[in-house]
Structure formats: structure tokens, C-alpha cells
Image 1: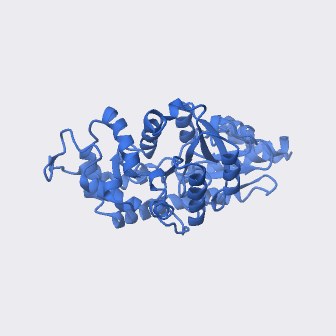
Image 2: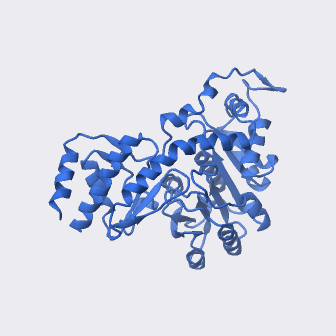
Image 3: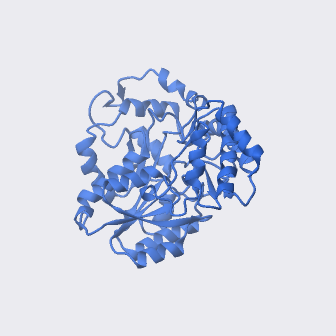
Length: 400
């Protein structure tokens, strides 16, 4: 191993760094873009709806209309919920677990779910909470590996559905092609008319570079005759505030009636005041798109910094994704050294997402996948963090 690399690493450690790039969070400048939400004067009534009181369990009309524009689904099929799409996803799984027809999932022998990998650790944690067995299928450039999906379904019983992030997938950035989404629908429907397609569009409007066009998921489900099996969620947690955004769900009456049973027990009334703020801030989809170009201008340079740093590595060390939107980059090492790279970074004062986090049960079978989240720190800190990262990769690669 080159002495200069080790010397450089020791010098880095002596700086006493403390840089955290574990989670994909907006930075303060991004949050400032929506600060007008905090200054709005809200009237008590929206038409004949008293925003201060109980009622409107699926959200006020204007908020549902906004969700309808974002998800390109009929307003009557929209729920406007709380900050995160994850919460609506959790409520949907809970509804199926308790009340699914003809058999609640809790009464099945070993219910299972398909999880494309690498994937979102919170999705995995959610399914694990219910004791639902997670079966992985790999992601490819076009989306889910359909051949592997068919193999998994052909060899397993009680597979209840699939959960995925079809645009700027977390963490590797795939943008599913229309054909891939159609193939997911056809394959799942052929397996069972009760197979659930749960699409988490967390990064639906989060392009920062030119990105493949996608037909709205609701339209593809309609064309594939799978609307009764399809649930699509999104949120404003990375559009306005993670601490005060909105979420939206598009679902057919079959699934809306299920989730009503859950939300009727746990969410007597949504935050209608916050919904009104958002409908005053965004009059429609064009306002959202214009707002997101400002986010893109702040995020893009950070991804470019990260790409430049990773290109300094020899190709023998590994490869990395170059997403055109979203919040993450995935590094894949050639050797099974992800945990060692993360350990070395920690020694030098840079925190990364734990090894294995992008796989169910925290177990990366190849120990080679690392999620990088460049958005939250400033550009100077990010340059330092990436210097630490590529140095750690070089050391771990030489050690192995």
C-alpha cells in the first residue's frame, strides 16, 4: 500500500472532523425556499370548512386537488395526509395486515413481500415490524429485474406484493421505464389478483438533471387493469419541510375503504391548517415544478462534487451510480469491503449510512454496497468528506 495514502489518512484523522452524510436531508438553504409558509395568515374557514375543527379525514378539497395534479390521478381517489409518504405506506400495510379481503395478512402462513435492492431501509423496517418476510430482487437500469421477479414468484407462496421507488430509486437512482412498470403489473397480476403494487414516489418531482420521461404510474395501472391492486404515494417532505409537509396517496375505492378503517381510528382529523398553507403556497403543479428547479440548482453542484471525487478512484476499486435526481449515490466496491470502508471513514470523522442498510434485515450479502447522501452538508464539508471516502476506499481495497 502506498505510504502517501496512509500518511494522508493519518493527517485527516488529526483534524478532528465531524461530518455526517448518513441521511438524505435538505440543507438549510433548501428549507429556506419555503419559509413563506411560516408567515402566512390563514383564515379560519375554507369555504364552509372550519380548518380549526374536526372533519375532512381525507383532506380539504384544494389539497386533494393538488395531490391529484402531482400524482395524475382523479381527486376522488386521493388522500392528503401528514408529512411523509412512509406514514401512508405504513397505514396501507397495516390495513391489509388487519383487514385484507378475503384473508387478513395476519392470518396467513408466512406472508412475504418483494423488495428491490438496493432499497430504502425504512421500507424494510416497516415490513419487519409486521413480521412480513422480505424477498429481494435486483434492480437493473430499466427498473426491477423482471426475470428474477418471475423466478421469485414461481417459487414462493403468499407473496403479498412489491414495494418500490420507481423514480430516482433510493439509493441507486434508477428511473423505471414504462415497459418495466407494465411488466411489474403483468407479472404480479398473473401471480395473484390480490398482489399489491405499492409505489413510493418520494422523488417524483426531484430531477436535477435531464431525466427519462415516465407515464404517470396511475395511468399505467389503469392501462394494465390493476388499479384495485395499486397504491401510489408521494410527499412534500423534500419539497417544503420534512417537519411540516404533506403526503398524498392515490388508490382505488377498494383500498381507500381499507385505509379509512385505519385512519378513522388513528387520525381523527388531519392538519387542515397546514394543508391550506400549502394550497396557498402552490396553486398547482407548475408552481411545484418552478419551486423544484430552485432545489435542483442547490443540489446539483453537490452531486457533481461527489461524482468528481469518485471518478478519481481506479475502476478496480468499484463503480458508482450517477442519478439525475433524488438524494443518493450508490458506491459498489469490487471487493467485499463496504463495512471496512465505513469503519475507516468513521475513524476519520465522517459518518456514512451503516453497511447493509440498503438490504432487508441490514444484511448486504456481498458486503459491497454503500449509500452516499451528499445534500445536507455544505459544499466545502462535502469535498472533505469525499476525500475521506476515496482515501478509505483505497486503503480498504489494498488491505483486502
